[in-house]
Length: 125
Image (cartoon, rainbow, N blue to C red; front, side):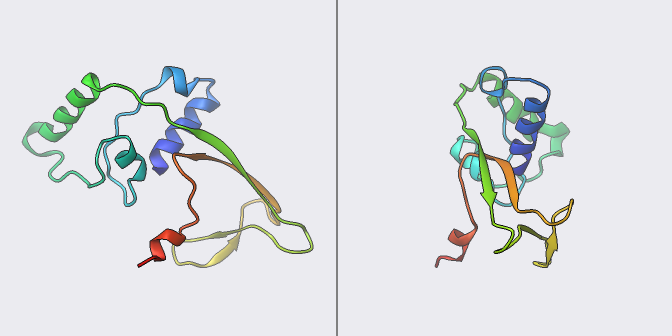
């Protein structure tokens, strides 16, 4: 999901209208793979992806070339806190809080793709 969002963001920065001009073929190599599942490409990392002269990759490319396209949504989400009541912090992979680059941030606008998640659904069950 992060790679798809990165690709979409970079294309948009270069004035490529992604909904009309760009189609994604997905290889679910990450940990979440929600976008890949929703798009119909599965959610599991393919095994032995480079074996037999990249046969798995070749098969994926053939599927991409014959696949139809589906629209996807990208929107802007704005998070804002007041100066008196908080700041927006980053959380690193060790779950340590740190200031976002640039210092005391009270407003953050980011692009989102596919769905909105705060991570709480992973704690269910």
